[in-house]
Image 1 (tube, rainbow, N blue to C red):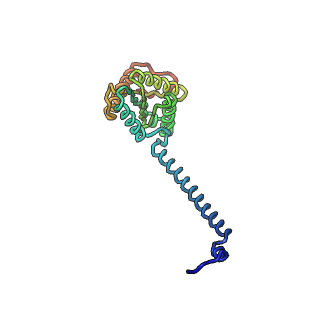
Image 2 (cartoon, rainbow, N blue to C red):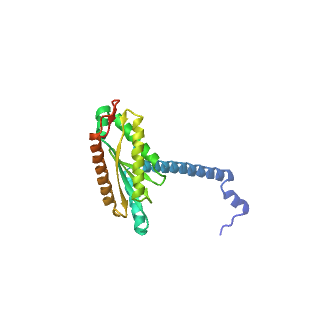
Image 3 (tube, rainbow, N blue to C red):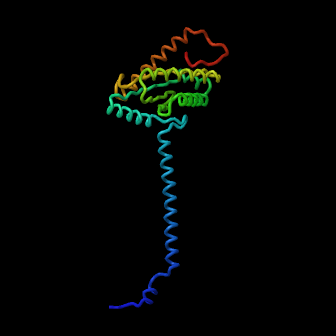
Length: 222
């Protein structure tokens, strides 16, 4: 057996300075890798947010809305006392804006509507742009009466917003509530849509009987 003296063993060890430099190099590599991973995670979170956001209005898109609606209905399925409502919002005769003023003006109207809807809701409410000129609003813990209050508030806000522009903005709304109108998302959306179109027909009927407004504003209810 070969025996080493203390001096020989010490001589065989790597120099302390070399070990420190190696440790520092390893630490730098770990820090660099951590910075890179943090940056990648930040980008992934950003992409995830963008995947659930409407690029024009900044509102959640249909995908996120459907997920939240499913969550609320699942919660209601576990607790029969849970209530909620779904509101559909549609800009009246939106095509006229694009035809008369161009798509840039149409985009501006959509952003205005998104803003007024957002400002009229509670923190826990969810509004999304489902496509075109249609929006949907999720109202947790809100019955049919509460939904009617919200719809009246939204219509009044649209009128106020339109009075400050060359285009008179108006919207049509319709709602459904659970469990009174059902507990399945597709049924609730269909009933809210039907109520919204009934409201749109009612507004059009009223507009035909109303004398034209002075000042040359373009009314979106025709």
